[in-house]
Amino acid sequence: MSTTTTLVQRKPTPTQTQNDESKSAIERLSHGVTISGIPSFTSIEKKRHWMLEHMAGAFRVFARKGFAEGLAGHISLRDPEHADCFWTNPYGKHFGLIKVSDLILLNENGEPVGGATHLPANAAGFEIHSHLHKRYPHVNAACHTHSKYGKAYSAFGRRLEMINQDACDFYGDAHAVYPEFGGVVLSDEEGAKLAECLGPKGKALILQNHGLLTVGQTVDEATYLYTLMERSCEVQLLVDAAAEGSGKAKKFASDQACEFTFKAVSDPEALYCAFQPDYEMEKALTNGDFLD
Image 1: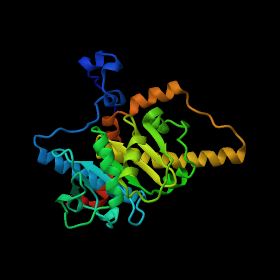
Image 2 (image 1 turned 60 degrees about the vertical axis):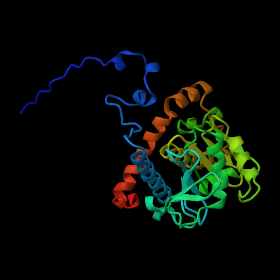
Image 3 (image 1 turned 120 degrees about the horizontal axis):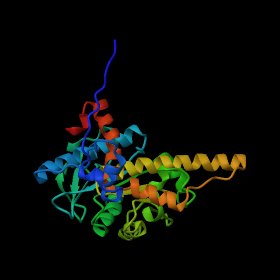
Image 4 (image 1 turned 45 degrees about the vertical axis):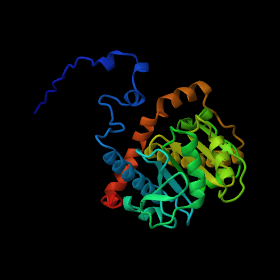
């Protein structure tokens, strides 16, 4: 039995006839059909509900990856209607149990004004996240936990090295080290200094002797960057140990390669898309339990 294949000749679309610089990051990264990016909505209410579903999903992904540590850790998400308010997780509830109905909306004074107002929020979390949202209008979401490899690498108080492609997401001003560990962040001054250290182009901070912090235009972007930074810290520790044990020199990516890769993959929409496999997997594994 023989089969024949008919090749369909398609005319190039206007996008295909333009050079790569005219395409969005996600168009350049997709081959053939472009992967779906950040959706748009017909109402604030629909957008808010979608955002909170992804925020609750982010906590579940963090739990599955082992980022929960007692009472520590928080994610914040600016409300799409009330820009001076942000959503966060309840204090003392495991990431793996958080649902949409558990999330709390805080105003700029830290007062609960929406969502699960009967539940407590994290005081240190408010000090950290409130300053990030106030200082940077483009920062709609921020993530901070005490994950294992982030804590381990933070003890060195140094930036990640550009030793692999994934580390290039944090190239240049995209990440910094906050070197002034002063204990639990409970002061307004400490929160302001953290935000200043991040900088207007920053996507991530290594908090010395503390852990990691990432930000994004969507909670998906901030969450993916956190998982990537945690893994990058793990790889950095492995490479450092191997280099020391073997005496072999590490090879670093060139600035040109790092800059090219950063521009290709660090776009907010591309980073949003990078989180979707984890989000969809979490929905499948939990039958969407966190969406309630």
